[in-house]
Image 1 (tube, one colour):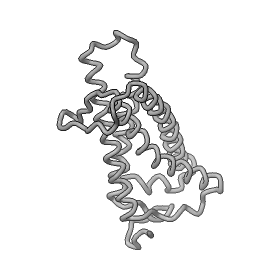
Image 2 (cartoon, rainbow, N blue to C red):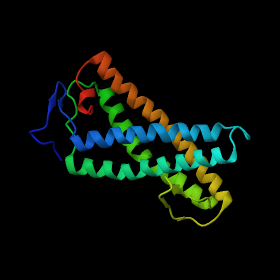
Image 3 (spheres, rainbow, N blue to C red):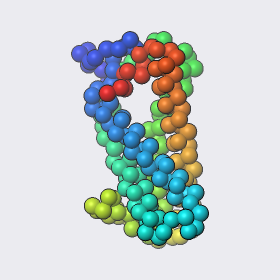
Image 4 (cartoon, one colour):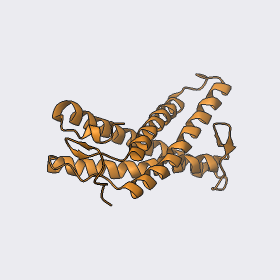
Length: 189
């Protein structure tokens, strides 16, 4: 689907729609909140936090993780509805391949990481409360061994997501600071 001819232009051509830009930055904030919470939980030595504090960290991580998944659905809907600007003609072949690969993998991971976490938590039979407003269903039967495997995969996938986010941010900053080619402004609010 092509971008509207009335879209705002930058040096790099048309920008993403206002809805796509808003959802992108909302999503960025959610991912950049959920990832550090997960790292803190995963690295915390026993006794570092009180039981109440640890439960609070888990609840916050699960809540933000669910929001990552929910906003991923909005993000795909906005992409389908609005399309994407054409690739920037000044990109090198390597930049075009790397950008496409990172973007596609990011889309896969924003679904896979929260789904693995939800499934692993469901198999453990821990309650999944989203900001204290509602509980998510357990769609996997209780199985502690399966839970460990799913949560292990969740952690590994989250680390891959973190690397992809770092590559995405690095590429964006390269376009903003080094190349100064307008690519960054295509997604800037």
